[in-house]
Image 1 (cartoon, rainbow, N blue to C red):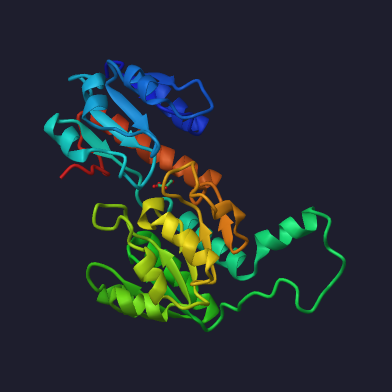
Image 2 (spheres, rainbow, N blue to C red):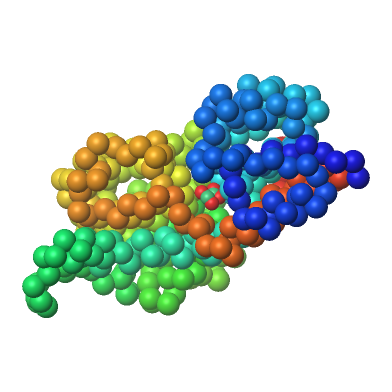
Length: 321
Ligand code: DGY
């Protein structure tokens, strides 16, 4: 196989880079930060394949900068809302993602956020670290039980189903909404399909597992928060723009809902004004898939897709129609 010229827009596990280097010429962004737009446009120039992150917007300008020899842009993520797939298809460039391997890590992380919000873990830790703890107190940091409650799942895809499956351990009622009911999964998970309004009204805890599309942008806003229980907890480990973040700050501040656990944000890494001042929100920096096993597995898939396409094969995770 002739050596191809590959660019990786940010360091991923070394063994994934080594697997590419065994066959091809590979350059990696040398900085410990995402590339700027100008740097990205320059870095992709003349490459046969590019591995990108969800923070890299890959549109027609980037594809054109790469040039007509470019065969594939492989996203190191399952989400691909940073890709202009139509523009790539028009240029006969393959686009791929990394589905499947991060479902467990992401679903577990959504649960970790739910535990943290309902038991006020971050708030309590801040209190201890600030030297304010004076001993056990019967009414300090009172949270909520999760056992036997109703958990709502918006989007029963791979990750949503993994999330729902773990609810069995807490003997919870699971309701979900999606484009269509999935009767097979319903039977397996004991989940009930409901419409969006019922999901909002009946969920004690609501976890988002939807892809970001024009239709799902601001899936939750002021109108939706007004329908939710005042004791409800919202979890988002999917994509930030699913939520109107300004409306969420108001809902949390005005106690329209009880709390939120957020892994993702509308304009990462910037946060909506007021969010950081709120105690009833747990905020972490988009780390749902950040386990070493998962990140290596994501790399294996991205590398496999690149090697396959450079070898003239159709990749397993092609997202072009
Ligand atoms: C993804 O893969 O889309 C996550 O957001 C990061 O792993």
